[in-house]
Image 1 (cartoon, helix red, strand yellow):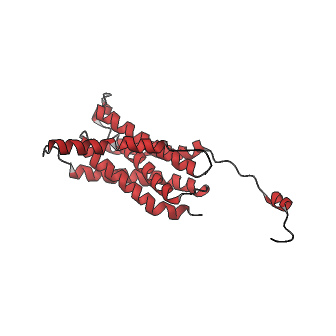
Image 2: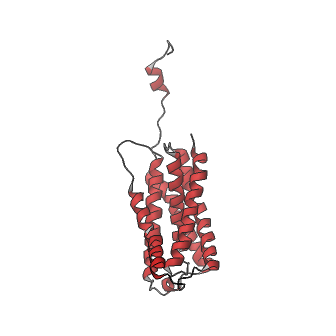
Length: 211
């Protein structure tokens, strides 16, 4: 330790830091999601049941699960920029569990029926996959920038959660147009899009937020 070391000097060098507002961290991803909803609806059209004001039950369930997944994981991402002791943000775990009900249900039905009457729509599905990823990529940007402003301690988890949050919110935005009513189609293509987003987040995000 240097002989001239002084606590007073350290104190004098301190500068106030403006606290990070959690609501601001969630606001920009929300704005981007709304913008993509407007884009998809204006360019591709609103689902017929939503346009008629009579949403199908599968539409409500799908949208609710995607919004829950996206919001819960995005909130966890925003909190990770401000690591603290004694504060748990594990609500995203339950959201992921809820989201898994779709692929698990589809798998159970497929196994129990062993029927060829549950096809997967390939062409429309690939389009859904690409549109969800496009919206997810844009939604991830403000979350990555937010993490760069903070000091996340678990970079790998931050990557996973950023990808999940972006995937869930991007899929939610596209769901306002998505014509799928089949649990099998929803489970395959939405799970693929969100899973891909999560893997990309895990591989890319840690390198962008390392301090």
